[in-house]
Image (cartoon, rainbow, N blue to C red; front, side, top):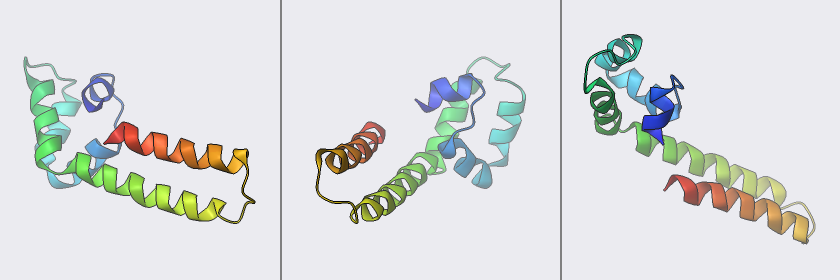
Amino acid sequence: MVKSDLAKGNLTSPVIFALKKEPKLRDIIESEFYKTGSLDEAIELVKQCGGIERAQELAKEKADIAIKNIQCLPQSDFRLGLEDMVMFNLERID
């Protein structure tokens, strides 16, 4: 998912986290992956910098907050649907 987003120019959270640690990544992105293999190099830098793991941690933090916030709702199919939606999205990123 990171690769297709990056190739389209979408800077998602894994890339943003990695940009904070690796200045070379900015140069590769700004070159619009002109050189052969530069997209793969960018993906590797994102992985090496822990961008994916940090994005997963952030998603889990936000999911925990979401689940806690809907606990005030009465038990119902609607609440269960919201909880399931949060969990589904978390499973997608693992």
